[in-house]
Image (cartoon, rainbow, N blue to C red):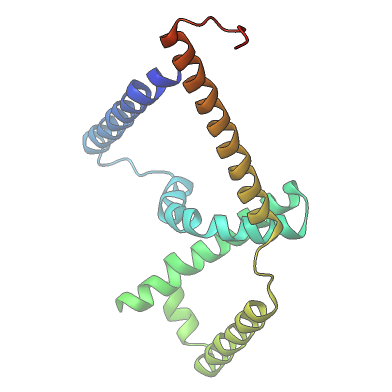
Length: 177
């Protein structure tokens, strides 16, 4: 039932997650000479940024095209910006350097190019903000469905309350007064 899922399902899922994390940690400590595959390290490094970037991209692309192309573009752009964020922007902010940053910093005229790109992106952002609709179709659909769900819940609550009142008075269901 739903009650069991809410009361115990989340607890069991959390305990299973803790057990898996603990087991992975123990395995990692028992095998220090074994390196993780590079793809696993890459996914671990970029997963949080992908989590942050994916939803805005999906909202944007789902407004412009059907679901499958929107998902594909969301994955591509999310990973592009996650890579940019984790391997370039975050180390620069932290004052650290890596081979990629050192290679980029040796490019001629990189500072004016970066400043120009930031200015162009800022201008594009301001233009999009100025011409964007107040509420998109996706948000409208979410709001309408939320209202419908609330209306259904209110109707169910009213029906249950009326049935409880009638049974308290000893009047069987279907009796006309």
